Image (cartoon, rainbow, N blue to C red):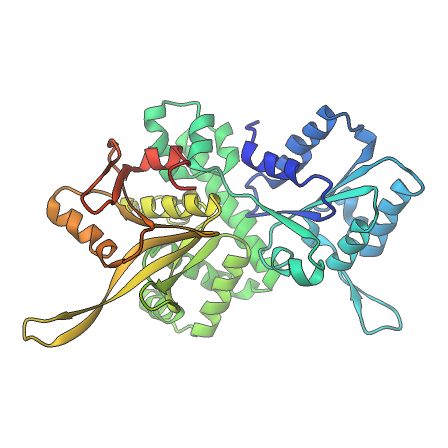
Length: 428
């Protein structure tokens, strides 16, 4: 079992801080292992008795009754009642708690009421996992009265994958960009096993979960078609209108932009994809549409397309985007409004694109993903946008080739992708 040190240390640092610890992220990325194995072992090593750790997995048949909020609260309360020692409560898949009506009152009891009550017990430290981006993490300030603390877990970063990979290290990049970083893949050896695992994961876990959670069973084929189009256009600007036109071109059928917008939200809620908005650097404002969409894991994107569309340029761009998210950056697509005189001397406007604007606190970086820079013309093309940015924040060009990092006359850093991914101190 691979030790997710970064996430384990985050949990340890939040221990007994008076808040509900919410471990969230795409399903099968290692949330349950982090809590029920790694953090559990840490508590035992710290001298906590196994009897003082309450473990509840709501997706197991034996715990179906505990999905009732009243039953769950009474179960935990009885376990710790009148005891002075400290307890730890682990609840897996907290989104499975049911909502029930309160008799005589126009109100319901559900997840938030349960967690706020459990968190009020002074001798109880509460940890939960969930797989819906909008169910808990977006309601920290309101429903949890500011007493929720989120730990976002992702599939393996390239650095984690490289550390755990048992094959030829020279082949690590090829394996990662083909099959991605879902942790269970480390247990599989053949490429056939890996591809079949990812396809099953998509159909039996993620897509089935989206269909069941949002009640779109009758439109499951359409849902799949939209996901296919998103997978093919990863790293490219798109919008519900563009997706609608592409869908019509492929299927000869119409689908409304509102329906597509709703389906995209479903995929985002499940953490399967993530939206990157455009930000006008010299205009200081966002453009919501079109935008770019990236899969949370590049292996899942490839599996959705049956590993047939290997656009190496956009795959590398996707890996960089996910790495920046893992490192805790808010990531936007950069746009620079640029005016120039055309061949006829008329003033025209164009937009130059910067692949990524990366913000964390007061820190900012600009990053351009360039699979190859074979000559000076290509290099000038890649850094054209950088030259129009008049601030002192670091500007980086990431290339596929393994090169010694160097800076040009403009102060722009050039670095190979594997060096960039394996040395987080360069951008952190």
